Image 1 (cartoon, rainbow, N blue to C red):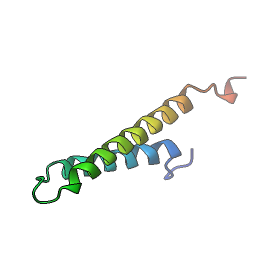
Image 2 (spheres, one colour):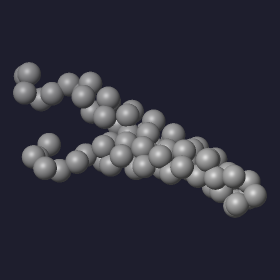
Image 3 (tube, one colour):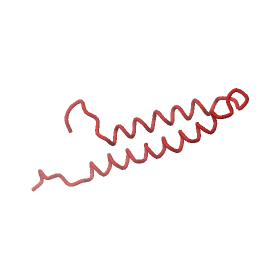
Length: 71
């Protein structure tokens, strides 16, 4: 990995965390102010969790892969 560049796994992790933060913020909006906010919050929660899990899987699989330098 080059210095200063993020891997695809880290992009997915950061995207997932941003979506989870938005879901948390939208979850606190009262129903009478914006009824759609809770539905959008649930969608962001599901998509953010999926992105986070996908990114973590990508990063841990990348680290477990055997290196070619050992040969």
